[in-house]
Image 1 (cartoon, rainbow, N blue to C red):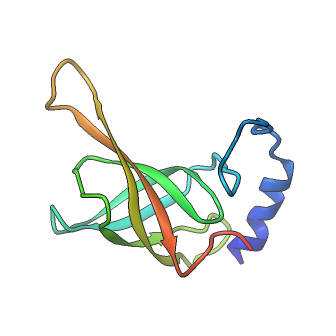
Image 2: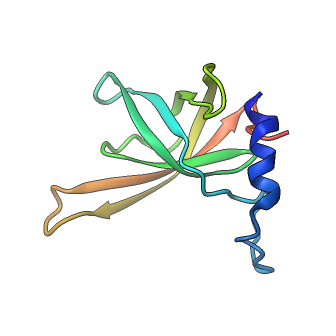
Length: 120
């Protein structure tokens, strides 16, 4: 299963030994392919997670979906044909301007997994 196999990657990662880190769970930079349903565009979107932890993940999206919205996710397991299905709540939304004007907006979202953890 993905969770067990990813432990090999995690055990080797020593990039975040910051003593000032206050998160409950360490974040890992591994680009996982994520599919989610966008309720604004009413379609499925594919993106890549920027990072993930035991309790959630972060990725960029092109639409502003309000904080508190629950998304249905399919996270592709790089070592298996079976994706991980999960629901996650948007708990953080940061707007970035890309390019020279506000038409190139990108949103970085932080999601908290509901009823599931990515790592055991």
